[in-house]
Length: 126
Image 1 (cartoon, rainbow, N blue to C red):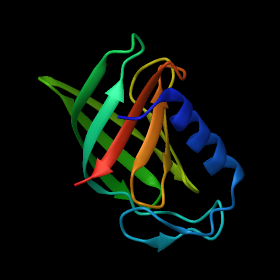
Image 2 (image 1 turned 60 degrees about the vertical axis):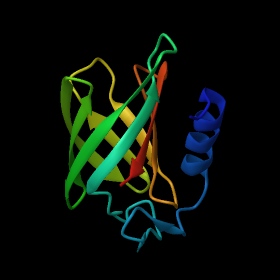
Image 3 (image 1 turned 90 degrees about the vertical axis):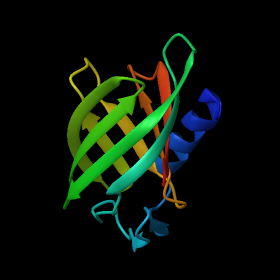
């Protein structure tokens, strides 16, 4: 599992650092904040709810250009959302008051926050 502090540090570092390293599962280079990374596929989800309880599940991401569709399955619950990729940042509207915001890591993982930063999620490619 990961800590809130580690995730926030990675979000800040990813936002401030140049995106000159290979990104996403497909290894597509992201030389500018306008480059589109490839993140489509199946992921394992591990997260912390706003109350601090842990959860895990599966996520399927379908990507077309800079547009993405997410389907999360956690236990018997299914959630869907759609969003955009901008550089290494993936923002997904899933019907809540605030979106899920992920940072694509060089190893293909997506580190995210939701519920206005009160909850965390890490997606690991399968």
